[in-house]
Image 1 (cartoon, rainbow, N blue to C red):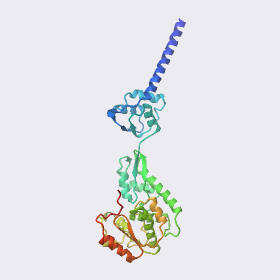
Image 2: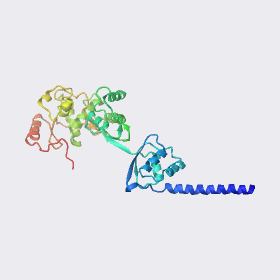
Image 3: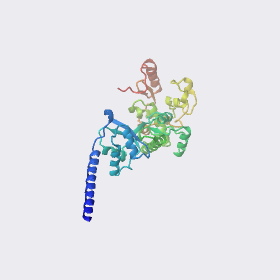
Amino acid sequence: MLKKLLFAVVGLFIAGLLVAVVSWKALDWYGNQPVIAPDNADSLEFTISQGESMTRVADSLAQLGWLQYPEVFVVLARIEKVAGGIHAGDYLIPAGITHRELLEIFTSGQVRYYNVTLVEGHTLKEVMTVLNQHEKLSSPLDDEALQALYQSLKIEGIPEGLFYPDTYFFQADASVESILRRAYKRMSSVLDEEWSKRSKDLPYKNAYEALIMASLVEKETGVSYERGEIAGVFVRRLQKGMRLQTDPTIIYGLGERYKGNISRRMLREPTPYNTYVIRGLPPSPIALAGREAIHAALHPEDGKTLYFVAKGNGTHYFSKSLAEHNRAVRKYQIEQRREDYRSTVETQ
């Protein structure tokens, strides 16, 4: 009787072992099989929400037609001890990957990244419109929330120009505030670095004044190779006590009142940003300035030019004297003004 019982136990053990081996082999085979995409789809945009379980993820994929055996997929995840290690976020799942590779995507955090670009020469108002309207950024900021952010960043005075123009990558549902904090930190780093390498005998009291100048250079520049020469003109005018007389400052000072043309009355209007009236720099930057503009402001080109006028093709004519400048204004703005007049160089 005992012998029969022993044989039965051994038999059950061997049978169980065989089942386990076969199951493991089947599960390993399943893990290496490709995920079959429905309707010959190339990829799937898929989102895992915070706190979702592997079972919920598998069921969602099955409902979308991207997983035939969700229960087996969950077992595979548990056997490989990754069921609790999935990362929330957006994923782009390519067709043809194996079930095991799909698990790897979810558990290694290969989430999809998005980007937003803060453009050189844009104002903070334009930047906020871009950020607040971005479909993948969360928590848009109103004026009250913006003021709270400025306080937390210890920004005193006007925040214009204190955020670095660049392309920022982020995961879905990153906050608008997180992008602004990164842009502020980046600007502080770039400005400090460029200021430490500045040329001698510049008419700036501090790095902030250099940033103000950089914003003027950014707004006046249509082609990159002119940045240094435009900065040189502005620096020489400051050194000689001449007014800067740059139109972008007038436009910025007018705000919503600017409708596309600058009148004689506007040229005489005493706003803090009207450099036809005030001497020296305006009280703040007027736009976002990139590294090249900051570098130009801190390394202006030597020369004797004191004036420049737009030629209508994105470039400028530079003059040493007022008489030469007046002739250039008459030529490019009146007598030979282009029908396709533009402030930037045409790209092919």
